[in-house]
Image (tube, rainbow, N blue to C red; front, top):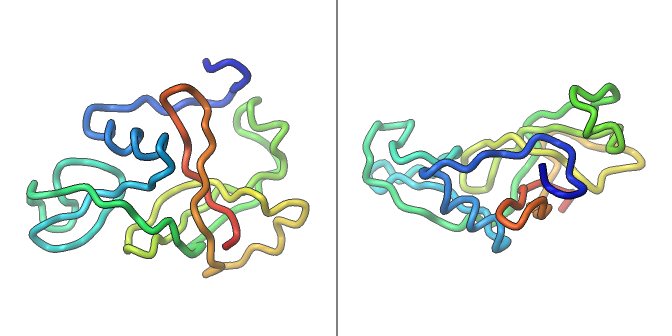
Length: 138
């Protein structure tokens, strides 16, 4: 557990190391298939659309829109107690893929969130190696 951070921490895997390096540098990195030309998330070596492994990394714009969200008043983990209410969401990135995240800087009125609301990526540094991409109103 990181000092002062008491929530679950992602465990990077070799396929995702470049993603986490980017997040630490303030970049949202995605994989893109060089055969079908589609960007995708989560980072893996094989394109989930066409099955080819001819892929490369791109830096996403960080712009997205809210696809769906919830407003949580009862935390599933004690570490989230101080964040209540908090807003887990799925955002659709400008590049096409959707990703799970947390909406931040929406309080004190998280009820003002709406589907298709424009958002942009921000990063929360939680350890020396890990920064989490989250999204705030654009």
